[in-house]
Image (cartoon, rainbow, N blue to C red; front, top):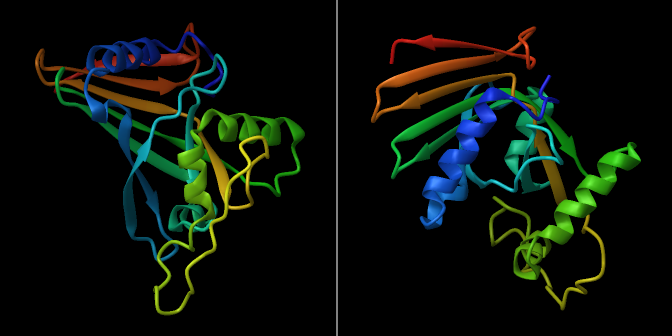
Length: 196
């Protein structure tokens, strides 16, 4: 699943990104997970590109964030990405691979390091901040010294690799809706036009 560089929905998404790239928020989307108490949990994350030439979506996060616990409980998630100028929505679902510093796969650790160095130094500093969602009264402020830009990822840096297995595309301008499902199609995907 998700290994074909010719996924038919990917070109639609790349075109939408290009058409909306002049808007500051074009690279933000919502990532929904299921928590251990079976409740939905949603947050906004930043699109960090595709993994190599695949259709797997990269997301950087903090190992201490709640989404990591959610993904350990249930490894499936859904993205909702709305492009305000072109009136297009992509709902993308699939499993998520959590790659932290303890991952035994050297290839995955290299991808994590590559994602770390692709971030600005300012972004990297966020992973040295105090633990998210802990009361300020319970945790003293973290000492954030200078970050050596040549040093690899800190322990709290985590790469999420989202592997789409279904994409629901809706264009509100043309009232067109397409459902793409990973399967046995010519390019590894089956697409169906459905009512909007």
